[in-house]
Image 1 (cartoon, rainbow, N blue to C red):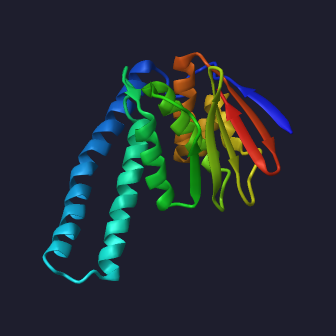
Image 2: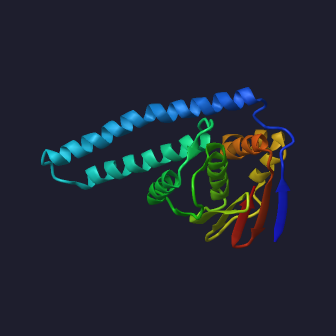
Length: 211
């Protein structure tokens, strides 16, 4: 088993201003996409109420809209502005359950109570980082021990030793990997702002990360 402690000595995005701008932009995009998706969902519902026969095409549209809305809710928490708000357990579970219906991952949020949005943001970014090791899908669990957050993952053909984890240690790794590691880059910045480091443990069938 490997146990690696990752702590960025330099935030890859460069400055707090750039981080804030990126988060504000992400929030704006998520906000602007919500209205047209809602309109599509309302259109499907109106067609059903008007007596139109439910067809596979309509079901596909409804399922796609639901999946897109779930991703937007997830992205808003992971990439949007954190602010001073707290996120309720109900909101997190609702988001993860909707996301699971459209993907190959299942999520367990084994955490009680509401939590600062910045910490939930870090957890959601970490979930996306860990998901890159699950090419065939799998089970992800979020828990807490004292003041530490723990994200674990199990799944078939789980990949360990991914180079992308190096983004949390060096800016050069981020430049080499490009957009495929954006969640790692942003996680490094959020952990830096929280004053925390990431401890990563990997075995052939399991990954555990905590901060």
